[in-house]
Length: 178
Image (tube, rainbow, N blue to C red; front, side, top):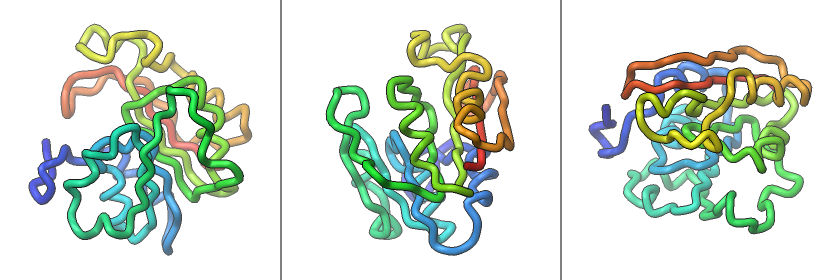
C-alpha cells in the first residue's frame, strides 16, 4: 500500500495507532532510520516537529511542502561515526524496520521523561517469509522490551507476531513510556 499523495509506502497502521501517545502540542520527535519518510510525515500531520535520520536521505527529498517542518540528518549508525545526539532528548523516538543492537540502548535513552518509544521491526523467524533473514537484524522475542524495562520504561505494548500486511513477516512491536 502506498500513500497516493507522495508515492511512498503508507505508514504502518500500528505505528499510526500509537502516535497519539505523543500527546498534544508541538513535540520534537526522532524518526531513526527514516527511509523515505512515511512515518515522519505521519508525525508532521499531527503538528509535531521531526528530526528524520537516515544513512541516505535521498528518499526524503521527494516529500511535499509539509516536510519543510522536518529536520533531516544524514548519518549512518553502523559506520562508527560519533553519536550525534549528545545531551538530546525527544518527546518520542520512532524506529521502524531497523535494528542495530550496538546503538539500541543509546537510542532508548533519547526518550525524554514521560516520552514514548515506538519500535516496530522484524523478528526472529522472518527469514521464512523473506528478507531480512540475517539473525543480526532480527529481534528476539522480548529483546527490545527487556532493555526498555531495564531502563525504567513502562511497557504499553510488547508484541511478537506474524503479520500479513503489507507483506507477510514476523514483527516485534514495542511501545514504552519513559
